[in-house]
Image (cartoon, rainbow, N blue to C red; front, side, top):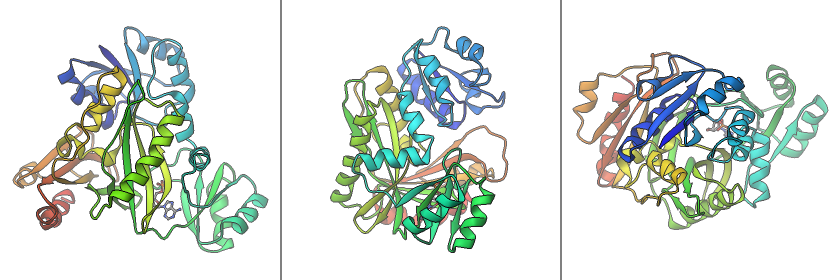
Length: 363
Ligand code: AMP
């Protein structure tokens, strides 16, 4: 079986590494000749907007998936006329637009922060009334890792941010004084069977994920069940196939939906060593119509991203239970270039080594 992947970043690379034991081969489409998945599979360099590039890419593939959520929906639809494309392009369309994803989840009865669309100054005034302050003004599309958004505390700040963010295609969202950020990854197979990983606690810095703790410390069965209920509705409504990641704000025992990603996710990297079946393998199993693998954790894990620096590999690997993943990318400030997962049998042991993990990840 030959799997085509739109996008050739580290998520694609890790999909391929998980797929080889299952006898799969991979072809990636990416606009950059440097795309790091090209080190572990065939890389076609081309634009997602170019029908000829898409046509050539599709030749000889059995199915197509994506590892990058800003693939144009038209590209996914174009390919879906020729061969199976999973997850469904509809999921891509919803997840690319912060207004659409929040409206979609609210329609399923999932709590969200208050939000209102903003395309004009009048709408901004209305939204300030409706949503209140403090709030976040966000671009509907193209934002990631905390880009394309501003925290606003006063109407003046809101007007400034409105102009700075382009004055249209925006969303005003109430600021949530959350206890912590958590994410849930679920996988749905072609026959509709589902499996969920445990909720994960995520800590960000400068809008970029730094650290994930899995399962989330102090996780209650009730919170896990609530999150699974919400994600299960989304998987069902989208007729989803593959891994879907959802990020929530946790306030007490409540969860507010923040955003979703229709793909494998950074907060699931710990599953490579820390779960019975990794998110990457389960995504592929779902696409292929194979039985899903157990999502049970193996002990407890902490995953730290390597951002803009190359650590001393020998120092990292001298820490027992540390697993290093280097993506083969050029190091640039603010760029995710690898991660380290530290696995332990219990929380106490993991907690004791967290400072060392963070120290290693910060070089
Ligand atoms: P996003 O790209 O929407 O996930 O936002 C990036 C980060 O900004 C989140 O991980 C939060 O830490 C913070 N953030 C976003 N929206 C809100 C909100 N409504 N209330 C509080 N913090 C937020």
